[in-house]
Length: 252
Ligand SMILES: [Zn+2]
Ligand SMILES: [Zn+2]
Ligand SMILES: [Zn+2]
Image (cartoon, rainbow, N blue to C red):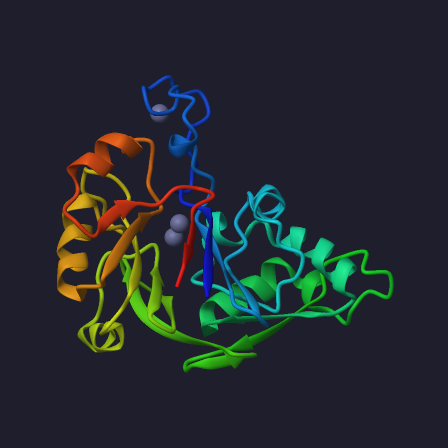
């Protein structure tokens, strides 16, 4: 299994438009973060998690030519607004792309992007997607994705576990029942917004506490704002924990 970190940034991305802070002006690739998303693949199957506003450049950079399904974490703009870029994959592979999400996210997507869920366009002139509401594990080819309920402030959203790896972005708390689904992980990919507290995201201190409790063999932090300099953060973290960066590929 291979995990491509397509984007590791927060909703504004880094650099932030109009910001002259040291991270935004560093010019270093590790401090240039597009909106959070990953692509998970093995020999036969490729799964995209979320379709943020940077999707086109992310898929080009990772060389993705086929997406067998999209799993959505939630309906915030930084996780869905690149949905139109799926059209290129419809066109390339001549097939409808199945999408999976919780009930609220499915309803929001179908309302905001109704044209994507109509019967397929004969010339693939618009995205052609299907939507399935899920509450349990889904198997696609040889990959199985298990939804992990987490709380993004008060909003219940999904993280996903696939094999011995899990992706938990945009969260403030993890319900007890979900901790039970996160045992024996080789890799935990975890929200870590910034140093300062935030009502709907974990900050660095909270992320470290969650990472310690889950105890994955490796934890990679994502959804970071420009408050976090990659190198300073990397140097400050305990063994087994590191910041992710756009373009990172993790291989099991
Ligand atoms: Zn987000
Ligand atoms: Zn900045
Ligand atoms: Zn969010």
